[in-house]
Amino acid sequence: MGWFDAPDYEFAREVLQRGTAAIFLVAFLSSLGQFRVLVGEHGLIPRAARPLRIRRLRAASRRRARPTLFRHWYSDRLLVAVCVAGVVLAASVVVGIPQAGPPWVPLLVFLVLWLLYMSIVNAGGTFYGFGWEMLLLEAGFTVGFLGSHQVPPPTPVLLLVAWLVFRLEFGAGMIKMRGGSEWRDLTALYYHHETQPMPNPLSRQAHLLPKWMHRGEVLGNHVAQLVVPFFLFAPAPVADVAAMIVILTQLWLIITGNFAWLNWLTVVLAFSRVSDPIAHAVVPAIPERWTDATTSPVWWIVVVGAASALLVVLSWWPLRNLFSRRQLMNASFNRWQLANAYGAFGTVTRERIEVVIEATLDEDPREATWQEYAFKGKPGDVRRIPRQWAPYHLRLDWLMWFLPLGSVHEDWLYALLGKLLEADAATLRMLRHTPFGSVRPRFVRVRTYRYRFSTRAELRSSGDRWVRESVRVEIGPAALRDE
Image (cartoon, rainbow, N blue to C red; front, side, top):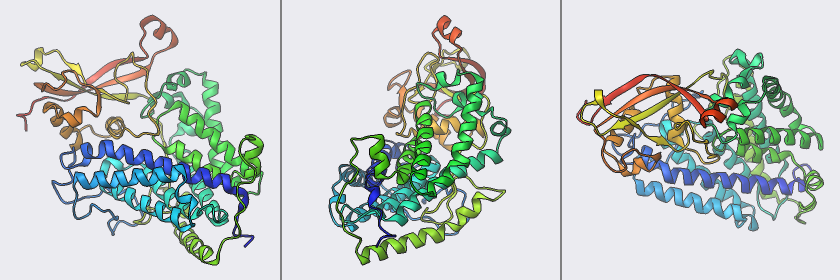
């Protein structure tokens, strides 16, 4: 069926399925390494200690709880089993095993990945309240309907992936225009590279660029998010050019920041509008023609058509949200987290306040010598170059960034302090450095510091990449005997 099949998008299908599966692989590995410490039986917010309560993102419908395998019973062993199953299934798609079978095989694998990871997200509470979680879920559900090598890529699914990219980009653009004035006066990038949640090795260099370049960054961002997405639905090669612009702007974000898999997955999804002839023209090593698959069978057209119709109907709510004065950011409108609303950084913080945890072995906290705990990703040591972590997601480090934006008096932070006072081995492995190893500290406290990137002259003089000044002590000193 001519209108249904898109034989010129075989390369796009390869990128979409293998790339999305690769992100699932990272997501399951991230949960395998962190979920038990954060939300496990003995975690900071332990699941087994109380009835399962799911922190829902802002959504139009909140009445029905979201599905999870852990609703009635949780154990760390079950969590490990879910993560291992997810890793194995995702890896199979990355190497192309399900794609070699009938079209229902990759569909089944992606649906299982979607359900398994949704179970983790819906049980993860605060530590899983990020927009890229629902983005991965929606992407996983959608790309499963691209089928296998036995059928051509379905045009409706490719357009639905393009619609997902449109919501992601245009939604973020509209959030910015409705947000802080720094986006409208083109000054947002004066601050963002320095104050973003988790800088990477090149963030400082990006911050030190001339201000005229920062204004150009913001202007280019507005074009890429508010104008270019409309051309994703144009015929080739216009759609190919639009996709390439999205990809290039996302690559700039990748090399200047650590936003988990948000930008990486956006790059993958943008390939939905890159046709085989254009891909071959840009990179001749990419074949111009991939397979000799015949037209899709009727049963597959019916399955894909039904799923596409469902996603089109569900898209009414995010479409309306895009043009609402009270636009929601990273919102789900149904319990299955399909056809969501996206967006990020409607406002940009203009100074960086870091929460630092310190400990001492001394008996008298008033005369004590305090030493810091070092986190893997967030700034601490002023001489240390920030590392590249994305697409891996350091959930604890990210939430530490959010604390100064609200209140530092979060239950999970007090739980973390308790774990540090106990020198809990699993918790200490979440950190880069602990001042006393496995020895229990006598007291801990929480301080805030104001951080900024050093200038080039300051770096040459002191060797410090950050300049910081103390703000105040927020919590403590506290010991285990304290209430």
